[in-house]
Image 1 (cartoon, rainbow, N blue to C red):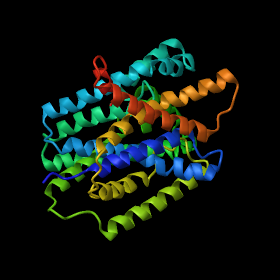
Image 2 (cartoon, rainbow, N blue to C red; image 1 turned 120 degrees about the vertical axis):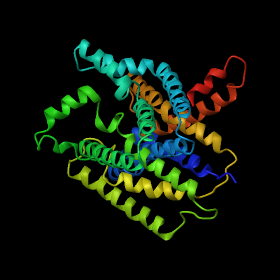
Image 3 (cartoon, one colour; image 1 turned 90 degrees about the vertical axis):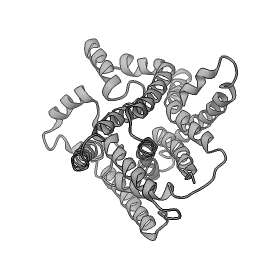
Length: 347
């Protein structure tokens, strides 16, 4: 009997809304502390959850070259679609607002295609592609060799991304600023680049393999899973508050407790067994909302500049979230009409 993973689609949708709140700083005007804990803490679980879910379904199929190519091709099409519609914002962000000489700006932009973001959020796609290729190559290795490489890479990557993100302000004190700037020039910000997905793909693979061996009726609804999630979430929120209050945070993208919290969260959600008739719709909406939010929030900034107004952060969030839902409805409404089949490329 085919297992039901509609709950994963549901939480992908929920997290896509929370990620909009994160990028809009939706609660900042109401309470900076609430904004730090909810938008800068809980909402940060969204991208790790997306990574684990993507890896989980990737590894649910045999990791053959054909399946890997199909996975990467689908992501490249998604990349191209959103790159085109995001081009005005990308030109504004990467060229008009660049602090670098034109040759270096061009170099950084070309480099971004391979290691980080060209348009906002595209680093997630880049990381998924590189991770799929890496794990395809690792599948050919002996189990002991693969396991050693995956564990070593995951620890190194996670330590580096957390250190340069939640604890990034300590770089100067440790005399690592010059090294960090050279690293960023070549590979982009560690916490928004091709390497980020490695530990999460390892988790996704673990769950996919374990799930295929699980007996009927066996699930994750055990007290230890819920207790683990509660404890890790409490520690994550404490870490988000502490690093922010102490001025350690360069970026809220990665915390120490983000990975263990994601592990317990995904462990529980994948086994909820919810049956949702419109699960596919939620899956489509989560993708469209995630990528359209950057354009929509940029539209709010343009409106503020053009009309000399100030839009409350909660207003920006509601605009981006609601209009993202409208775009989802519009794309699904038009995609089956003659001449509009290309709209499917946006999800």
